[in-house]
Image (cartoon, rainbow, N blue to C red; front, top):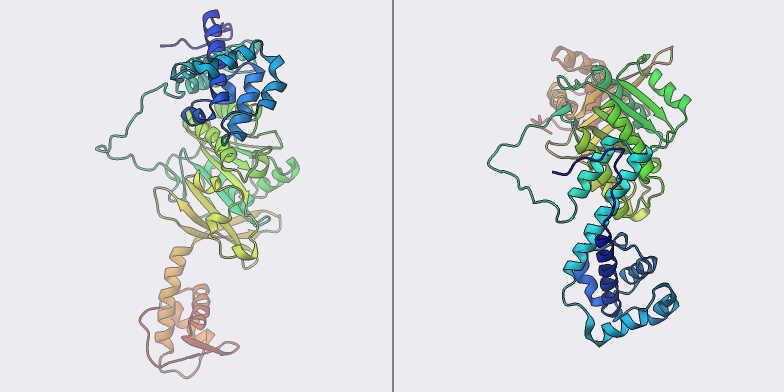
Length: 472
């Protein structure tokens, strides 16, 4: 077992390893220069980082990205850099005369070993100068040890029952998962997620009605990289007059980004220190700053960091993002495809929510992706009192739709045989049968849409047929 590095360790690279790596990088590059068809055989095993000599790095970058269809690398490029590598002419001549190695695998293995040594040395140097903590160093070293071919494959035992999902909010948010919430700007998603943060930190229901699973309250970190501190503080303070809570930590504009090693280390240090149940990153555009969000490769690189943080520290991470604008040809896009940026934002998370403002105030939140459970939807209503405090209340839309259908059947049966019926009569009769007034009005609108009743004048309704429908 490899001993963990400490701040006093600086790993030295043996001279024999250094020379072996220099020889292997020369052989690999010179082979690929005169036979670019070999690129296919090293795909996935070789990167620019494997080379130390600047000229070799430039050469590999050139033909790896631009020369895949060439028989060999353009001589003009090589000639312009011959001065960078002594005896290049002799090496090229020997290769052309038949000195190309048959098997590059041993040289690729040498370069991989040398790369791990350099990265291990880097960890030791950063430990020594204090720029890297012991916990983060252990994670980096574990990643190096799990490098390509560095560990056996662990297969699942399908004979064993899978453990049950450990819910934070049953059916909505689970432990150790990555979640994304997307909506249009100004829809209220930040307010809704801020309420979720307060709920997880304090243990009280989310949006008044959605209970947390037993024992799932705990520390929460909320990083807003888009709004100023005063605005973020005001948002949380308006939620039921939210008071400071030791398990809720909110930060604004602190350089929490996934696009730089420094940004990743910054967020990792906070997660390691506070051991949160939930981490919220608002918004993707800022937290992924510097990345091309339309490119799957760059987006997936950031998600790999999130997966590592999730697996290492057992936290749930939620990302807030926007819808992308739909062109005329994209008006019927599925909600999952409207999530801003690369398809990676829909493919990598365990759950994806979309939010759409309804009737001026309410926000309809739908799960458009949910691993391990069926998708659900809720309508969140916002109420503000005279003190400016906000209360959020969630209504289960599936339950509401079912109740609306039952109420619609009652209304048709009640109106059967009657010429005209007023709203007050319907509401009173429905109330005696256990249907509330709000659901009655929604059911009346539905019946008009499906063509079962007519709204002949204000507060007056007629049934279109004398037949009684059993279901709709």
